[in-house]
Length: 469
Image 1 (cartoon, helix red, strand yellow):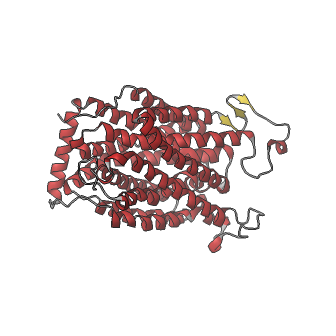
Image 2: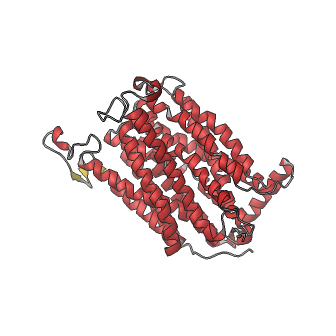
């Protein structure tokens, strides 16, 4: 028996909605390997050569891409709504994104190769295309997933994405990072494919590798997930009608005050959680001096924790409701971030930490994460990785629960806008605080402001479905 979707149409079958979820498997390794754990720390510490200046540059670059996304994404979403189909747009964005990711290979140490500014330009362009693909992918959820499984499908997508990043990081660790740095017999003596560590090729290879991964695993969505019918409208008419519809919906937000409050609230806390992901690896590398191997091990375990959080998010959403799950996620992330930034190599929660001799600092024989501050920071991060993925999954289902059924697509368009309208704010905040205080710690800690504000505002949102005006 065919099931209905939240949009009131016939939902996709298991192959269709699983292929929709699998698109996160295709995209998420870019976030994990490039923007968090490998390329961004490499760019900051090795290409730029100064972690503080590198974090500042990345903060401003992300703020530029966020501002451009906020201006352009609603227009593209309006066009797509009126044209009726979304998969061709996703295919176009992926086709443009893949070469940009591949070209990161040419960002060489010390600003060599394509240079610092062109590399930042590539990161900005890819970030914009990446978010465009997310806007259109999210907009498909209400019509693809069965209404009774929308939370499960949303969480499943995030779990797939984190597991994909986990697998790729394990491969990079085995094939490129550990060879030459480990005495274990099962590790190759040299990086595979003849990559040269002297020119940071084991770090740079993630660009071409992720580019091929994205291209390959976008195919299930393109081939097996059903799309809306083409409305057959000329592009000019689609633009005009789409913008008119968005403006009409915005003018009616007074009637949808609760939904409007949620969109603003989500805009703030989502920006804070995304900022934690973007700058987590850069901060850890600069604070503890972690290299590629440590960051890969850190990322592997953290991605596994995040995948658990994605599954847990669906359970909590069903048990507690979306609002309580979101509050738990946002409040937990803010609290644990406050703990994390106060774990330093020489202090733990403001208590000075020192050992008589540097050699006595290690508390076990393993060569990685062997000091008490590193272990505590590592463990703390695993917990807030779970909270963040719970937040992402439940925020999406919260929108599905409170938007009016007959206007679901329009409101998911506004939901997409709420995820991009202030996408520049967290990176700008981190960049400004890092630059002003000349401190990675101050820059990373500034995200607590957004998370705390989002938590307080979420208290006033009601979990009840709105009706059309």
